[in-house]
Length: 287
Image (spheres, rainbow, N blue to C red):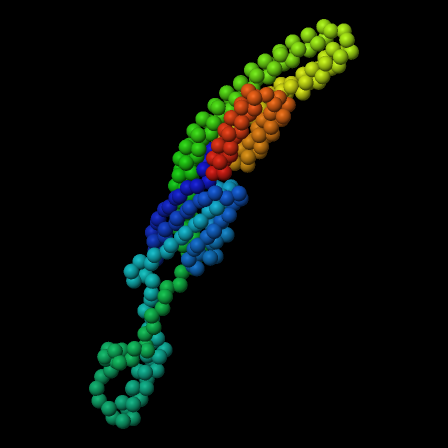
């Protein structure tokens, strides 16, 4: 049982830069992936989404990738050799034509700054693809551990609520048996009379006996509660299954209260509904 909320991060260093991946997950009915990546990694964005989908099935996922360039690696100084060649040839011609003296030296470079250009290093996403995916894998593992830790806390609370639901089921079973015994005793006493009024009374009590029989509802209710207890021990996503089971438990409780509107039964049903709502609140956080 895993929570939909969690956090994981990881860092790694490559040839040009340091990569940092941060993952944050929040509650959401479906899988919603939001990526914030440097432009250099736009070409591998779909691979990043695929890796996330393989690990996470439900929830909002916010992914942040930062790329910090090492000093001296972000830019490249380039000499315009073609332009320098033109300068040198022009100076040689001027020396010959006008009889100029002196040698051409490095001081020329300082007087001609246009010979140099400072360019940003272009690195495509494919060049750092492996590094990014490995860092993402580490961040996803850390996220998984975070979600499992939170999931264990949710599991303990749901188990606590399930114990109370079992007590409610046992209480309803006891009350159902008591009511049936009272109805049968009443039916027997009515049948002892021979007047038409007594027979009509016996028929009315018999109808109440049929209406007050909640055995089938209790069997289904206990089955749903036990299935709920089994599901919360699973590691795979169970959030939607929990929603379905809680709806079924709620339905059976409603049927029981409508069939047997006795105060003792209604109190137990309300206690059961209260536990169902507490589990439903936690189920909203379960993947």
